[in-house]
Image 1: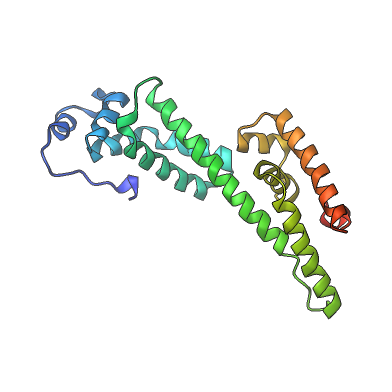
Image 2 (image 1 turned 90 degrees about the vertical axis):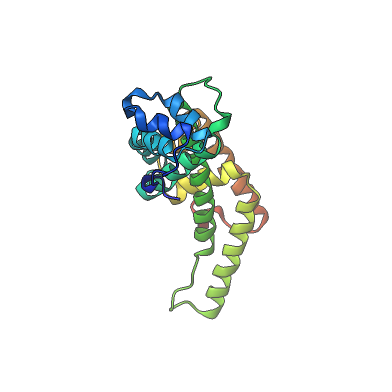
Length: 211
């Protein structure tokens, strides 16, 4: 369901009449969420129109990817639609939406980081000029690297991928993951040290993987 293309219901429920008789500006975000809890899709569309641009900008800054941001924005409002009845008003609706957006953005970034890292580890592909023995050695090293990376925790695999394979700066990684810069530095130091130990145990020179 694409939020931007939700069509108004033709049914004349009480909540729909409220939307139809009140100017959009007269309805607070909280009122729209209450209407969403009563399955009023027009309330969802109004909430989307009010907040999607700001959320998209926020997610784009976190992920650095506009197409990912578009996907996440759609997920945010679908999540809000599904859980509108659980909104208790302890924070502003905008804050609630942003918290959903942040969680979705970080989760998406981590999933893609791990996938890209696995792809990178498996991408030690032999050149056409490689001898059979060289090609076999590259594949073996790739397998070892994957096994070593798999022994790291997800947050340490993530920092290796973002800094060493995607070339992101520490500040960018901090923004993407939502962790402080000092925490990212600590994770990077631990990840490098742990990878060095794992590669050494496997008989691989750490310089080969530039970590």
